[in-house]
Length: 304
Image 1: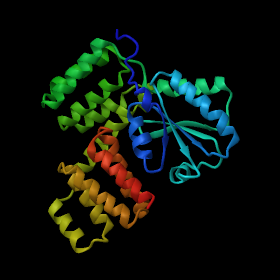
Image 2 (image 1 turned 60 degrees about the vertical axis):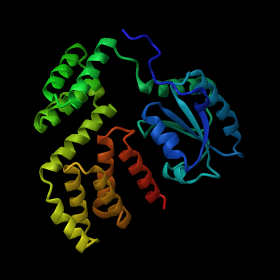
Image 3 (image 1 turned 90 degrees about the horizontal axis):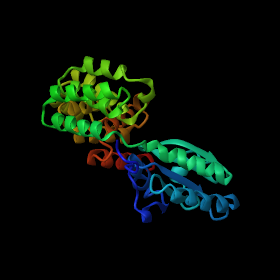
Image 4 (image 1 turned 180 degrees about the horizontal axis):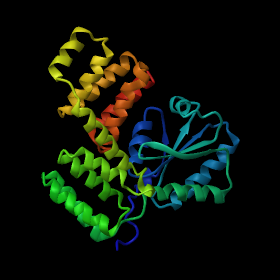
């Protein structure tokens, strides 16, 4: 078995920092992809904040790098406080995998703060068995090299040893997608235990399945591009173009078209552009440059 201590740890000088609206994406959204991040919304004039702040800092320090803390002065930084509907302070939110997962308002006793921080720190999970981890890494390498069938066999073997192994389930789904067997990929995902159904890895492959389904009905890029060039405000054509571009492996171009659609009319078709962007982001690695750049640009448009 792996020895304890394999959970990613942040450098001590990066555990606790003052954040701003400008740094929120990097400090919170991106950083929380690997390590949970607690955000403390406070203000200099807030009495309870002066009690809560040091207590959270102490608990985060005690957690030994398994969680980070970002402190945001709401008087100077109102954009994300408004988006998260912070109505009183102190307000605390916890983020993991780029999404808010828990939080509370007001000052809490020290014991409850310690329990909250420990609960958030545990979101990253415990290290896995060394042998299973090595097998998963080998299967991922097979998948990258195009040996999807061999990868599927290895992922399946891991699941025989650990039926609740989310990385193995996700890898098996991606193996079938690589073999263009969308139905089998979906069947594998639907068979995952309920306990891991909300794991970010499984949410990612769910998005990949949806994108693969869309790709089956994608229109011709050239014709859709011509339509958009002739009628830039044809939102349906631009949306269809984005799907076609993605289906042809032009992910960055697809994201660009969806961002342009969002800029022109963010509410079109029940905010379809934003939903499609999130689908693409969820389907890719959190640190993928396309995802990072796309999230930054979308955030800029939202708060423009």
